Image 1 (tube, rainbow, N blue to C red):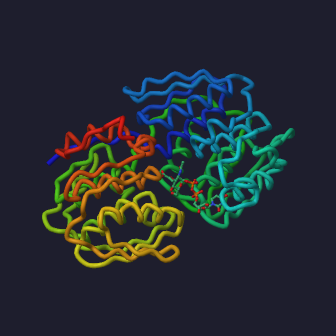
Image 2 (image 1 turned 30 degrees about the horizontal axis):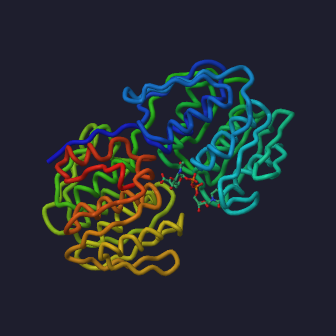
Length: 410
Ligand code: EPU
């Protein structure tokens, strides 16, 4: 039996830090996780002319935004963190221009940024691409527009929202994302003085204002880290209490664990997951919130890999996420993929081996599988895990897992 306490969500705090650009003065963000991506975003904001100080053990970041920030996000930072694109909306809105390096594999109009770009264009920005940079210009103030997203993209919703709060007139974002992280940024923008209706629904109505004021805002807890600990309890036959969590943000995932045989108790400030038998395989279909989160898909594939029975996992957001299955297969997992489906047949045991983490969530899934594989599993590429999980190894150790971090092995 063990206890872990969540800090703020990576996928919220980066956007909150970007949103600070919308107001001149000092914004303070609390409940900030001690992860690499926060350092990268701090560096990006510094290069834009902000004064950023952070006390990450204490979970606080303070950003002082000048009257006229710079507007260029260089490739060396964007390459390290795709989420750097979240400065696009605030910069166009505040400065009337943004030059943001394109994350690898993206082109204007291609899958990936098309909805961000279309949204800004509909608001009057001119957006082009040159020498690997996306160049957005809006010498006149952005104009409110009615924008229909083809898909409830988290990133596109955020870009358009952060542009709309300072635009002239009303912007309606239809088919908007509804993730708790979107609600978090809306909450911060409202406190800054923005006018937003429909928060938490698929239709956001934003009435632009002339200026916003800096605030102090606490980051929403990281539901994906919480979900990862929940799976850790289920896969190891353990008992973990997750504190500082909003259980309602994990409704479907926790329900799946109950179907798998776990006992889940919702507490005032979190939840407890207890598993006393071998888990049963559970089907998963990833979808935008409130659907099952893609960011917990690898962890649930790991769980299914040692469960009783077979499960069909359908990935609707990022097909490349199944790449990690090849690594799981090195541990003896029986997983077959076809397009965006994976068939997982549970095995009684996995067999330890060296494996490579290819992204944050794949890394988490492989560590979970390693916890139950017979023998010693080495997970390479733990730098990926550092991007999203603060103090992962010490937390695992405190729960009784036999895990060490070996810098040389990476
Ligand atoms: N998409 C487009 N065009 C766009 C925008 C998105 O085709 O203009 C597509 C994407 O290619 C993808 C799908 O829409 O297939 C979903 O993309 P979305 O924009 O919703 O995701 P995101 O904003 O890029 C955030 C998180 C991801 C998380 C997704 C879905 C951050 C920094 N990243 O990405 O987190 O998986 O939402 O919830 O917030 C992670 O933490 O491991 C991670 C990848």
